[in-house]
Image (cartoon, rainbow, N blue to C red; front, side, top):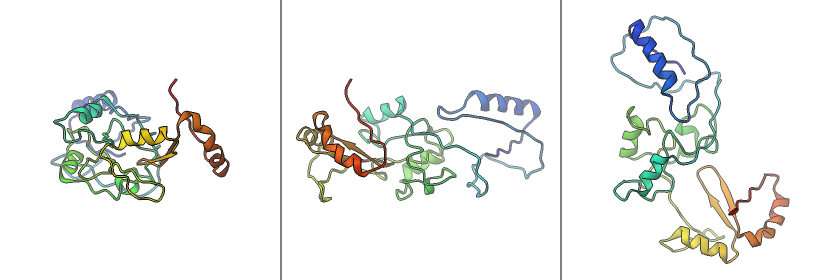
Amino acid sequence: MVIFVQCTHTQFKQFLFRLKSNTPALATITKIKTKDCQIEKYLDFSIAQSRSGEVATRVLPDASICDDCIDDITDKNNRRYGYPFTNCTHCGPRFSIIKKIPYDRKFTSMACFTMCEKCQQEYQNPNDRRFHAQPNACSNCGPQLQLTNSKGQDIATDKIIAKTATLLKQGKIIAIKGIGGFHLLVWQILTRQLQCYEKKTPKTQTLCFNG
């Protein structure tokens, strides 16, 4: 990342201090190099579009939902109330959705979801915690919960999560498609049903259970 700063020497020292001490929750600064240069005079703050070229960066792993986003989805007065794909710059998918770098929305599995006006305003607001959050979305413009059978036909229900739990107890194997891929769910006593599937795929399987 290249940052052009126009200020006094004292202001620049303060800027570097705040840059190092006030990083976002998921950000890590590995090195800072500074130099004087002659550039045009800027009148405001802006983030330029990513440039192509040699890439020397790492992609962050996915992060569990933060407390602020939990507050959003549990607040009945919030526009993201109950929306399961809520995220911000402090949490949400990263590694699992990226197709190539730089980490821009157009290079992720969220590329097909165009942000609505309100989400776009958050994305462009430097004072918003969703400022440049690439997976930013809401119930109006982002992915939606949907329950289908093995033939891809919709299962009519207004309580998708409760219905899914019922199907699991009935011995059904559930494939949950998230933003970054699929997870297989099966009731604990029926885990042997997955043995045949495990022999057909080289990918590692993860078993979650209540300890």
